Structure formats: C-alpha cells, structure tokens
Amino acid sequence: MNNLAINGGSSVRSDEKKWPKWPQYTASTIAQLTSVLESGRWTISGRWTGVEAKESEFARQWACFNSVPYCVLTPSGTTALTISLEALDIRAGDEVIIPGLTWVATASAVVNVNAVPILVDIDYDTLCLRPEAVEAAITSRTQAILPVHLYSCMADMDALRDIARRHNLAILEDCAQAHGASWRGMSAGSLGDLGAFSMQQNKVLTAGEGGAVITKDPDLYDRLQELRTDGRRVRSPKTLHPGEMQLVDSGHVLGSNYCMSEFHAAILLDQLSRLEAQNRLREANANYLNRALKDIGIHSLLRLPQMEKQTYYSYVIHSTPEAFADRPASVVCRALEAELGCPVKQPYKPLNDNSLYCPQSKHRYMTNQRHWDELDPRRFSLPDAERAYQQSIVFPHWTLLGSCEDMQDIVEAVAKVRLHAAELPGS
Ligand SMILES: Cc1ncc(COP(=O)(O)O)c(C=O)c1O
Image (cartoon, rainbow, N blue to C red):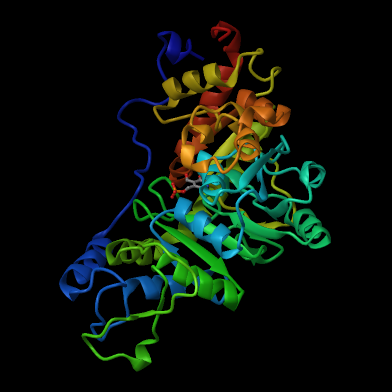
C-alpha cells in the first residue's frame, strides 16, 4: 500500500470518483414544488382551496409511517423538541435528563422552556443514554427523560421505559437522527410519550429545514397543535368551503407560529417515497462494512438486538488506541478524509465542554441565582462521552448510498490508515 495521502502519497479514491450527492431530488420533487406554487396556498395558515394541504398530507403519512395516530409538523427539530416539552407541561426549574453527547439543540430546547438539562453520561458502545446513569440522576425535580437515538443507534428503550414508569416520568424521544429505526417492532418516536424529528438538510429525510412531533396521545396532540399554531387548531376539510380559513381559534394554551410551509411539506412528501429504499441500501452497505472492518479489527457501534430496523444517520467506528497506534480520532479522521475525499468527523464535543452550549449567555434564562448556577454545564462529569469524542469516527449517511466499490474503498482506506497509523502525528 502507498504512503498515506495526508503525507503526500496517492489516495485510495481518485478525484474523479464521486460520492452520492445529498440531498437528492428528481423531476417528481420539482413537480411537487410546482404544484404548491400554482395552488395559491403556501401554508396551512392560508385559505382552504378545496384540496388537502401538503402539510396535512405529510403529517398523516408520517404518522402512518410510524404507526401512530398523530403528527404535528414544525419548521425544525429544535421547535419540535420545544413544543414537545411545552406540551408535557415542563415548568421553570424542572429537570430534564438528556445525554451529554448530542447536538446542542437537545439541550437548548430544554433551556428554551426554562427547565434545567441534566447531562448524563452515555454508554460508550452505543453512544446513547446509559440507563443506570439516568436512574442515578433522578431527583424530586426530574420531570422527563429525553433520550437521543444518536446516529440512528437507539437507546435502551426497555430500560428507560421501565425507569420512567417507576418514577412517573415522561419520555420525549429525540429522533432527529433515527427516521425509520424500530425497537421491538415499534418506530423510534413511538416508544415514549412524544417523538421529535428534524428534517434539516443532513437528515435522512429532509426538506432543507423541518421538524415533526409524533404521539399516540390525543390530549398531547391537541396541545401540540395549539402550541405550534398560535393557539389555533386545524379544522377538518369536511366542514370547509374554498376561501375559508382552515385554522380555527382555540386558545387553551399560548402558542407560537411554528408552522411548516407547504413547500417544505411538498418536498418531504416526495422524499418520504424514497426513504425506505434508501434506509435498506444504507443498512446493506453498513452490514457489509461491519463484516469487512471486523476482519481487520475495527468495530462499529453496538446496535442492541431489540433494534429490528437499523437505519444509519451516520456510520460510526471506534478508533481504540490499539487500532490506530494511539493516534486520536481527530488525526485519524483527517487521514481518512484525505484517502476518501468525503467528510469524516469526530462525534459532537460533550455538552459539558462544548462552546455551542452556553446557556448562561442568555440573561432571559436567569429566573433566580440557583437556576443560573444549575445551568452551568461544567458541573457534569461525562467520562464516557469524552472517551467517545476522542475515539469515534463518523462517516456521513450518504456514503452508505454508494456502490459495493465505494464500500470497498472505505474498507481499504481504514485498513491503510490503520497500517500506517504510526506515521501520523500524535495530535
Ligand atoms: C440529535 C439532534 N437533536 C435536535 C436537532 C435539532 O434539529 P434542527 O436542526 O432541525 O433544529 C438535531 C439537528 O441536527 C439533532 O441532530
């Protein structure tokens, strides 16, 4: 094998070889968008035209996809989490348990409702909440557990549901990275009280930006509707005449305008028709990588056996000290990027030491001194999240939409960097 590309050798992949594009669109996406443009209705808060709004259609389809009766759409995953916490009636000063390793929005949504995110350590093998750590973090102020199915690897939902039941806590699943995954036959998002999704550009189901909350609970659904529609609810088309408003005043709770536009919903309808096939392809390629990389001593994330449908927001491998001559993941990632010509990154920096998570920069969150001190993330210790940050390597999901040859390139690049790891710098 040649010298490492990062050290001036030739790379495993030539520049001519392209990775699959993301996001993807076809003529059907354009047709969906055009139909909204021409419909005269660009949002659910516009007037009824005699045709079902795209957002109602997508909400129905997304609920059906996840085998739940209800879905409310929002403009982002962050707003989906925020109205979910509001619907659960999380109050100022309440504690919500979240994993210390996640995108900052999981925590900022909790802070947005004036509650206190309690950062809990993860299980290094799955990168998801560790149930024993959750149980140890429960206090009289804890109201909810907010597991994140990071990189589509699902948290141990049997254990978390058991803890929630015994302590009378709500569960809000952050499914921003788990569209289509399932646990004992139940979709990610349908195992807790509420499941919040993001449809931001990098996600496996995307409209550029977007979000959704799913639930089985009709009361939570009513609250979610009002919370995201300035206190209004969506009227059934059966009672509507063209030109009438479909949103009707309700006003049981103070809401905000977090409606998704018809354009976004139209793109999502189009993208949803491809999701299952894409998930299957990503899974097949991930299975191939799992086998081939295991043969050279590299392990990917542990998917618990209860996970029936495996989906892949990212493909993650552990870079243990033995595997890459003690080189940190940051250095191994740079070497792999040079070999493959695609982004290869470390996971998120744990939230107790992440510059993006700085709740104390916003004075409106300071309800009292105690609350203020409790928002300081540095008070949490997260050794396994830190280890995962130092030792995990994350490939984006669109590489898994590639061919067998593309997967062989990944294996070859990992093997090459492993073999030459001692030639890499130590930091
Ligand atoms: C785990 C997780 N939670 C929440 C969010 C927030 O979603 P959005 O960016 O759509 O607001 C994201 C987005 O990256 C995420 O990855």
